[in-house]
Length: 304
Image (cartoon, rainbow, N blue to C red; front, side):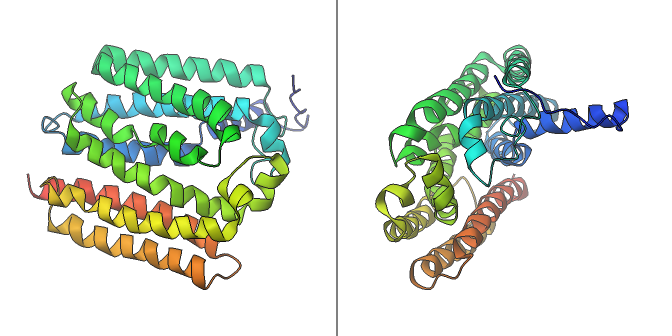
């Protein structure tokens, strides 16, 4: 078991506590969790019974966020040896030795239990169990098995990360609806080009850690081709909310603009790459999903 690195004796108690708090917060991957919560809120906003349920939206968002953060903490816990080998992740709290595995496990269990209790008590059991299943899918199925077993790990494992819109929908309605599954399809299709762009940028890290990401097993050029093909497929999938009447012209305009932008980055990555084109594509993909789901919420609010 790893040992916690010593903290300089010159620090005050409040400074030490703040450093510990920051490390525990880092375990939850807060930027990722915020994006997941945004997509869950979009599912809540588009659900037919979401009107004037601000309290339920807040509680559901907190519960979903807590279980997502717990899944991220378990991911840190299970991948500390891999994280220590990669430049991008070697400074994470467990990999660097600032927190022990036991501390991380206790934290993850407390956060997960609290999040499940909130959802089961104040939202509904369907949302609670589905969110817990997503935790298991990401933290165990993807992290322990898929990530090390196949270069299609992110395609299969991406389903867990694509579920928050459905969780948001079920939080409002206690039902699973095909419209919510359309939102899941958007994130499911978005995930491979998003992560493969990062994998291209960090190929040497994944090689060092012996993780069979697609650029490592099939080469960078093949991966670039799939990134481009997936961005085209993503444009088509993103049209579905408009085509079935879930959204309106505002969403359609932004969806076309940002999906064409994603395709532009994928074309640059494939045919005219510079040193940081893969990284730029990865960053744009985050902006793409963020804007798309914010516009979904705004679009729906303007027409209801």
